[in-house]
Amino acid sequence: MTKYLKETIHRKIVSVRMNSSQNAFEDIFMKNLIVVGLGVIITYINGIFVIAFFKNPVFYTDTRYILYIHLVINDIIMLFLSVTLYVLNYALPLLNVTICSALLFIATTTGENTPLNLAAMALERYIAICKPLHHHRLCSVNRTYILIGLIWILTSVPALTDVIIVLVNEPISLFLTSIICYPKSLFGTNQHLMRVISIESLYLSCVWMTLFFTYFRVLQAAKAATSDQVSARKARNTILLHGLQLLLCMLGYITPLINFFFLALFPKYRSTVLFSTYIMANVIPRLLSPLIYGFRDQKMFRYVKMYLTCSLFLTKIDPNEVQS
Image 1 (cartoon, rainbow, N blue to C red):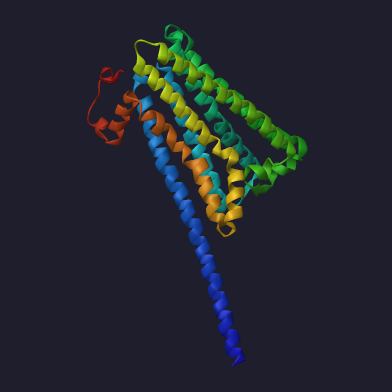
Image 2 (tube, one colour; image 1 turned 180 degrees about the horizontal axis):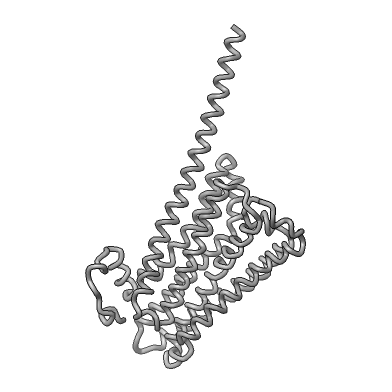
């Protein structure tokens, strides 16, 4: 009887472990499936806007659309890297440090690009409304591409600094080893923390001041204007939406605090909390650029609607029909 009970208990323990392992696998599989699925859907939507831009020369000479499509392409790159790193943490937990450094470098750079691009877009709207006679000169196509290049330089230098700090403090042989590819696992020193606090504070302060300045100046222009009230109102609303986008971008900075708060309340749901905050901070904001800006613009939206309904492949549209 004792032997029978031992065998029964052993079988139950094995069964519980197998069920637990199977449930854990199903949970991981579903979360990765959701992340990849959202990534594909958002990339498809963003890709439609990119195709609409490059296939229609009517957008090539407009600074507003050049800055906008740069933001969308940047979001596509950032989302691809974010989803890739998320899946790799499960599929390939240990990644070569050199490859990890390159992925994190690009991810950090594209993450920093978004706030600066939003500030540039707000400034362009401010000049268009408040200094319309100088808009063509100040916001020329060549200057816009120079500005985009400057944004990439300003954001790549801090990301490169993270790698340099590792090179200074660690032996070069570290780059031949493998680690869990996560920013804090590679860039987790006090020097990295000081770099993040100082640079992020500087950049975000400049961006917020730019948004506040442009919003109130456009607001004043709208009150003083006797004509073109519609354009001023649209510009003001656009800058407000840029502020909303910036707030969502800042979720990435306060995610650790949010995780700490909710994990203290729901310690049994650690995996669910971390997954939810990841989706809210890293995936969903990438969808907002086309939804907030692209669908509000009649010229861009008309082309996008044609691609979404596949009718653009059947009907050729005269660019003059969508001039705003």
